[in-house]
Image 1 (tube, rainbow, N blue to C red):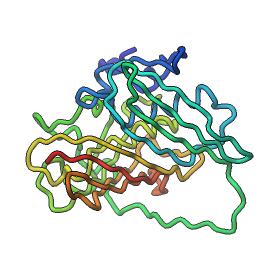
Image 2 (cartoon, helix red, strand yellow):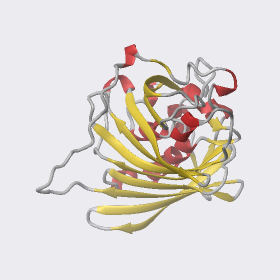
Image 3 (cartoon, one colour):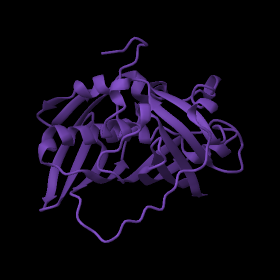
Image 4 (spheres, helix red, strand yellow):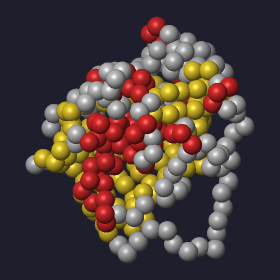
Length: 273
């Protein structure tokens, strides 16, 4: 299942998902871990993939997803989707992802058909940043104990604006070009979801020494029925707007290479610094 660089691509990993008595089962390799737990973006992607495998032909486009990271997920997980409401245009699905028979992630997904509307407001412009070739590496340029978690090796990255992790920055803000290294993982919504949480919490730009963090909740809206970009590159920004009492609330936006917003969200993170 590993690729030529001894990585297990997202495409290959999700293809190994198998149905079982308590949901769709999956073994997570070490290269998709964040510390000792499964990387949060992969957890969300597993919940989405399990839903699509079980209900895909009957579902309209994904509009929104709410993810609660309730406990750490180990290397063996199962994801159980359940339709909680299905109407003419909208379907709500909950997914419980369990590890060692304990609830690790609970996700709520909203799928909805497009409808005619008099309104068409798009007010989420991409920031003016250098192109990919003019930017230096983000994960690639982190050294020693600052080099990033295991899962980061699955992505090419270029720092477009903001600071590096643990640089003592005044502004908690990252803007980074990201791309799956595996071409087969680039052009799917599940691939975008797996990539969308790859940046470190923006508050970590202000750190000056190592300290733990833990994602608590993640909410995002998908702004296009079928998001696409050029050559798999997405411009991702995370900006901490309020960090007090050990919790950081951040805004997250992703644009495609044409500067179109495709995903917008919020995340709450526990900060042990």
